Image 1 (cartoon, helix red, strand yellow):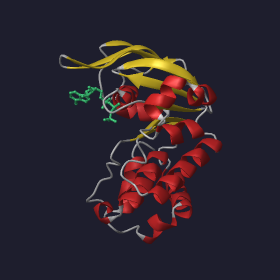
Image 2 (tube, rainbow, N blue to C red):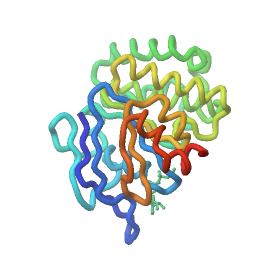
Image 3 (tube, rainbow, N blue to C red):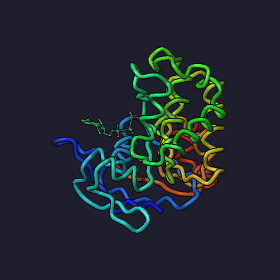
Image 4 (cartoon, rainbow, N blue to C red):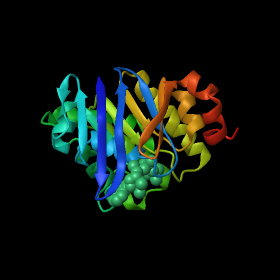
Length: 234
Ligand code: ATP
């Protein structure tokens, strides 16, 4: 479904990622793990059209999407739930959800989808007219996830959805991501919490210094001695 072929992104003289090749198949939950600065967010931003490629190509459903605008990439069916949530703090919950659907023309279905989001996230319904900046961290993350789903993506990318949240909220977020995937949406997940990510994914890639150093199924990655020592606490 999604293929990165030898993709590089540079930040001036600094290399963000260097010749990354990876694949996400339809229906899979694939995770990228690695330390801070390894290049995980840069990979998602490249897919999303937010960073120009210095090298390589990104293909989605057989079409080259590298070089396309972020709006065209949303239209192609890819959505991004960014690191740090990035809800629009001055906009209400409803307005944030509308922003997630801003490319859609089918306004009636958008309204129906919004109702479904409120069924799924009753807390958001309770706070529908509240500005997003006043929500708790967990509520903002729920809103960011709901907003990402409002474009009806076929592939959704989550960047560090557990960051800074209390353990019980983290559990809810991971359960939600598993549910989204079981409903048929393909997922590319970036997580610092390598153990949790490997427990829930089908396959994973380990990034170090902008390179993919190990890839495999969840089981292979969990059993890998190097990964166990460096990322899973032995
Ligand atoms: P984190 O979990 O901290 O976000 P990451 O694995 O997502 O880590 P990236 O944010 O993709 O890593 O960063 C990869 C490399 O690119 C790092 O060396 C980082 O310092 C550099 N980098 C990222 N964004 C920028 C930027 N806007 N300008 C300059 N360098 C950047």
